[in-house]
Length: 218
Image (cartoon, rainbow, N blue to C red; front, side, top):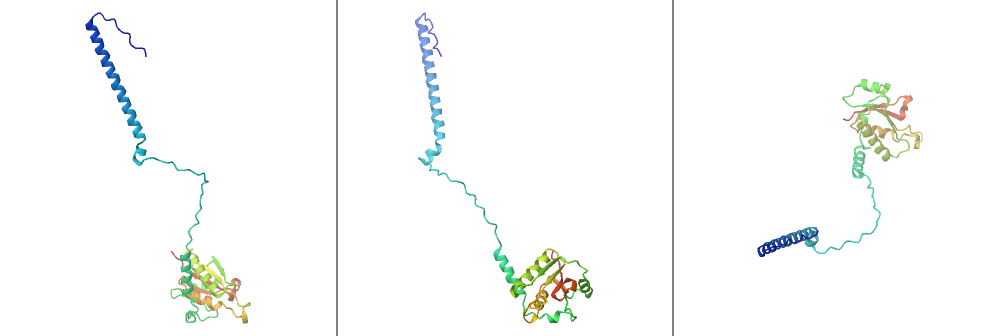
């Protein structure tokens, strides 16, 4: 920007007026420069506010590392399952006196007081379609007890009505005596979900299996 040309002065009075104008312009320019400098200092101080508050900052050395994404395993209710197995083992006792609860027919059927004989007859005739089966062949006594307890509980929870439990006829057992036959009846009587059971028809396993009627759990 070119400076304004110096005007032609014709008297001492005009010179004095011009000098006062120059002084006012110079003062205004100095004040403007001072304001700009103050604004710049304030802006710089605001940018460095965090550094001024905590002191000098030393940047951390960043090492190049590949991100690791750990896939956490799903929690397993191990203790709850162990507790449930223990409850089943304790609930299904081999010392339970079942003979007094069984019907005195050839098949030694069982029914709870609220279940009529007609219901057992329907169960024996296959009135309800078979919905699940448990085969206990080859299991030790403790394994069979646990498997039967889990099976009954799971079927009742799923709303199943009629299931079959195969305990075998004992042809492969020492003395050809069925090891599990009496125990299975004893265990089933102790399960509250079991409303009754009968020996299966010949086509369904005969004396080596039981047809079981379950109470559906809400």
